[in-house]
Image (cartoon, rainbow, N blue to C red; front, side, top):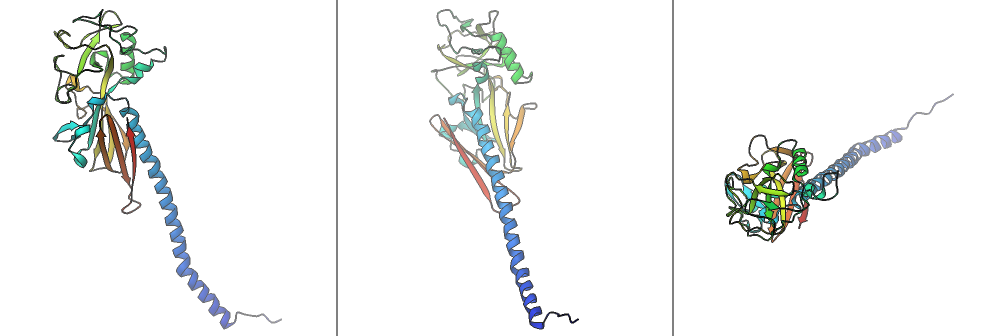
Length: 294
């Protein structure tokens, strides 16, 4: 029985086809793999950068609006709304009011601080705040700060009062009087609906007291390190007590790695933040997410 072998022409066709596949098939396979890596990387960066701006915005939206500053490490700070530091500012800092205490503590749905001062019942030594529970507020601050702070570290901001970013919040150091400050150090009193001055030997005499207030127990700082690409959130520190986010022991959490750019601008009481991230897997590729916070 005779067996047919490949003819020379058939072998040539096979060799030609294999040559075409080896030249273009590998390129097609490489391109498909490259597109897969790009799509996967892009989706990851999209998700991570979105989480980053949402994490910042979630705290920034509960800021005392006049307190927000832009910082360039080693250089003086400026109000965000009128900052000239532009891309040189790598730190966004603000005082946040206690939204958790405003919502209650889980055991009650009413606020732990009412936000109202009874001007008729208050005096230089004591501020009466009806429906406020400083005992529970103290416990909540302790829980939120993991024991790092309590009500003696807290302060009040009177809505409608004059605001001085340079002297009123403690960005320059500890506040030792009430007359020149925007935010006022407080402590609890014997009655749970009363505040007293948190400055030893100094009361509220001569201080403009307004009916409505916001309670605060911490400042926040979003810090971008361009050297390692880290974007971190610092919290549980009180500028009005002379503390800074750079102090040892200040709590912080990593928001995101590989951050190429962190930018923010302010117009009036509105702040726009932008986070741009990159990856070593894609050369010259960066993705940015923005959010406007009112």
